[in-house]
Length: 79
Picture 1: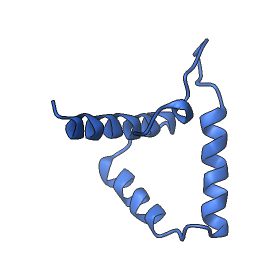
Picture 2 (picture 1 turned 135 degrees about the horizontal axis):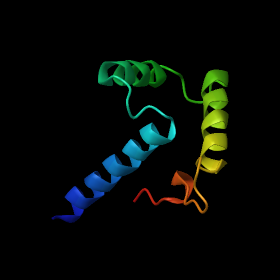
Picture 3 (picture 1 turned 45 degrees about the vertical axis):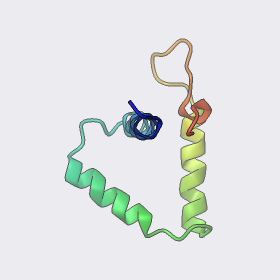
Picture 4 (picture 1 turned 90 degrees about the horizontal axis):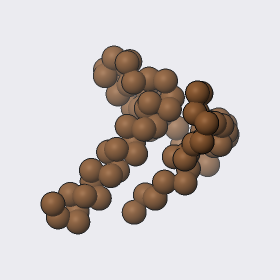
């Protein structure tokens, strides 16, 4: 596997983990894509963007339910 393919696979794995962390692993794919497309319309730096970032940062810091010791997605490497 090339380094580029490994990088792409890791990115997909991490993004999938975010879907699971949000409790959406069983959600309809069209619903998920629609929600993501709506999020893409939120202007970076806007009050709505900051509000959503605050919610996400809090969720990354919260322990996973039922996990004694957790490695949060926040600590995962993205490169």
